[in-house]
Length: 460
Image 1: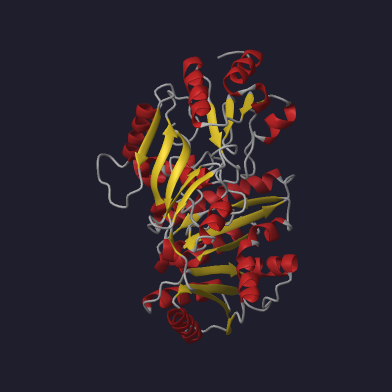
Image 2: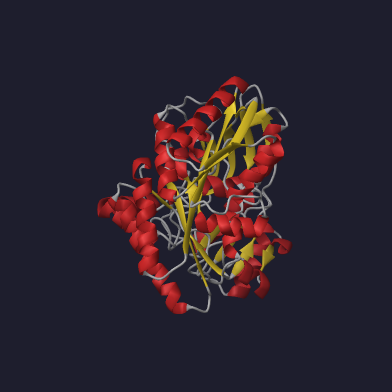
């Protein structure tokens, strides 16, 4: 590997000296992402301005065996972009152009440093909907969403990012630029490399451009809230809603601890004596939206809801959605170390999983609040700690290991939307088994024979 000075000089020759950072501030800042407890210093931070510059950096890295960690905004929660073995952090936020929005073909073509919200706004300006809606949408990049196959609040009705990726431009670790898929919904020629790269977490190639599917924007949307005595009661109501034949656009929940934290943080007027709230919403044709929201209210009431209320206007609907979106920052105020995790179980076992999380938290003497996407069984147990409490952090790790094991035992998974990264890699074999782990490593080698791309993550 080149010396740090030689590396910086060589990289500057490839992308320009103004786009290579080796100062301590930059190395520290890009040595972490949004995942607590993971940090490592790179040797250089590089911000390429074109696909060709990305290719040049990767060719150089393979030739000189320098690790490369691609990243967008670094908002992931699984340590997918922490440079565990040093090397280069390749920051793609300069590739931030929306190249095309086509109403005729219902698609957009974007560079992958574009933020999710910017893409959604560009689509909305044309009367279209970009459906993936991660909680970090204002900062997260489309490339990061694709790399981790991000989910979001509309996942139950609209699915995750994977469902909207039609084609990709990507650079292999050896510098070749490839295009997978394209502008077509129907294209079955060859292995589906678009699907393989989506969710590959920057371990197989660097994604530089994406063609994503758009939908006609719904005519109307509506939102409501139902309060329950317990999260288990709310979980059972979710099963009843789905069994009633309704697939809402939004079906989210907060437990008692989250409600208290959000109310203290944002003062949204949430009911404080409830054990859980269920946030529900739908969109589409006005008569359908009205009928579905009324039916959800009936089902929740039959399931024992303390109260159900529909938002009377857009402002109140936005306030209710804010209750869900601000859950993490609200909980973060309770302690300066907040570990937000991600586990998913089949919907009919969600109430059982909620009880299991509470039992594990109590046994380890931890504050673990839970919120998440009730409609698809995706739970976010969140532990709040004092960062100086190292013994508490050890207990949290043991507790989350038990939570992941419980999810797998219930035919669930260790992550429904955050990804594996470095944080979940120790648990992946428990989920997919030794044979698939070996297959992942062979796939990784086929794309990245020198092993330079995001080492210590998938395929390692």
